Length: 159
Image 1 (cartoon, helix red, strand yellow):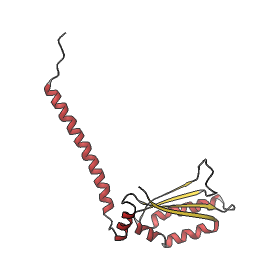
Image 2 (cartoon, rainbow, N blue to C red):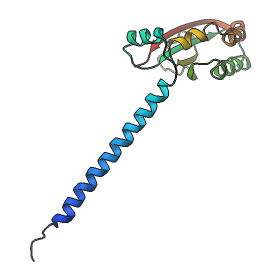
Image 3 (cartoon, rainbow, N blue to C red):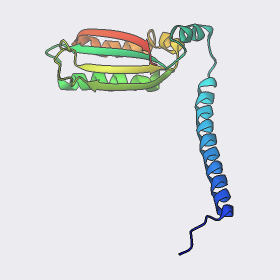
Image 4 (cartoon, helix red, strand yellow):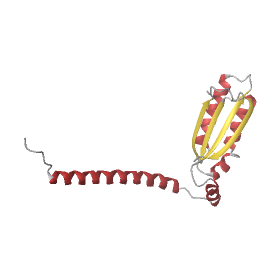
């Protein structure tokens, strides 16, 4: 049986096709990255945000973590209303990128009776400055206070 020889034309063609495919993947990745960066740059950047970004290493988004401990007499309906009202803030206050909520399910038992967690992601520090005194936020606090036993809040720049 004669030895099998590779057609040099097909070999060069495969190399060229592989190179073109790699270039297309790289271009698509670059376009996606540039589109994401461009959408962030559409908003005017305040000097304070730039300073805050420098403090945070220039990475990530500003996260606002709020954890509630409700009074023992708080009903499920009252707690559900608080969650609904908190979630609604995303559409009522500008600068909130996302809002997540959940109930503690850690098996460690270290939650000190804090049960409900909310994570608000702000576009920048200015958005947080708008959020805190905003009338809709204050109205939400009015719904929350009657059933709130304790709360703690931490903010950080996600990396």
